[in-house]
Image (cartoon, rainbow, N blue to C red; front, side, top):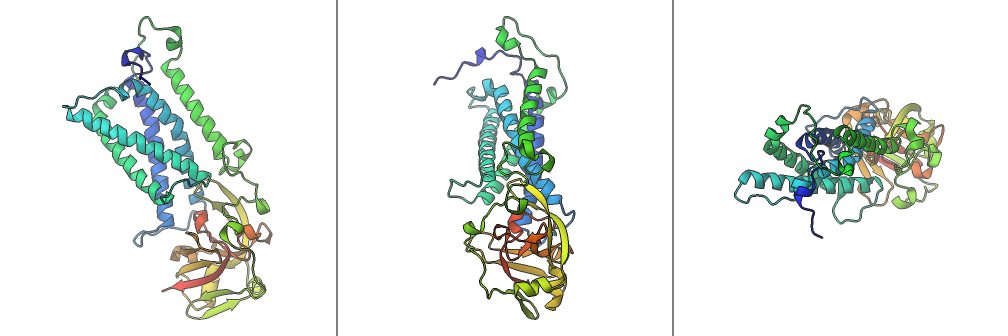
Length: 376
């Protein structure tokens, strides 16, 4: 299909001032999404040199909610930005002008990587992976590509951005059809803002509980699931069908200890009010009861600040094991949880025992735990 000629786009909305404003909004969402995504990545794959605090307890719930919300809101902003610059987007560049070639290349990389990033991010919230590559690593790499392309694009376009950064009079071209002159800059900005707000409100309820009833676009909603808490990975999907009568929990440290479920329940119990906050963006608070990890470490003769490897009964999977850094193992809120909201854990929530810790992604709140190992 032949693209319309550039002169047919005579609307005053195809203007550098409009593109600059929308670019500021889109850039803000990209920065928020990048920084919160970086935090999530480092929580899941923490470098040895980077200390990660266990408090505030709800920090990851906030940052990951912002990550998914900013990525969702970026979709209408990106579409509006592309529509604004569309007349010039496909104009043939001067092959002899190095600046133009760099600009077009940066735009090509930026737009294609952002489109792919937003698409796979959205599909991840649905837990659908129709591709052969690992999602998290690809998502992380694309984020750096986007930031690099964005910096190059800003550097090339800086003179134009500076010229149109402040408000300018809105041009009114002559002899335009009524359907073109009907929408002003302010009207366009209100339309884009309204679309972004509508999408945000109908998804943010998956982590902001009071808006749960209007979260029609969210794949998870508060209060829906076993024991009133959503579930991502079920016991059936994890290959866990239950526990045998001879099931025992083991902690391997300076002294190796072993407990039946009744013996675990007989140990001093503690309570924590902590959320499950998943990388897909949904979160919900809950009341947990069980044995503090630091108490178990004391029983086996290990220091409170010990790194702990958590082993699940899950069959395979990327998160069948996890590690609790020292700060989390020593935190009094970190539990080997045996109860949820006043009742024994449902199988889908990790029966007979699971990890619950503050400021941790849901994928690291390991379920169906049967062994802890103190890491020297």
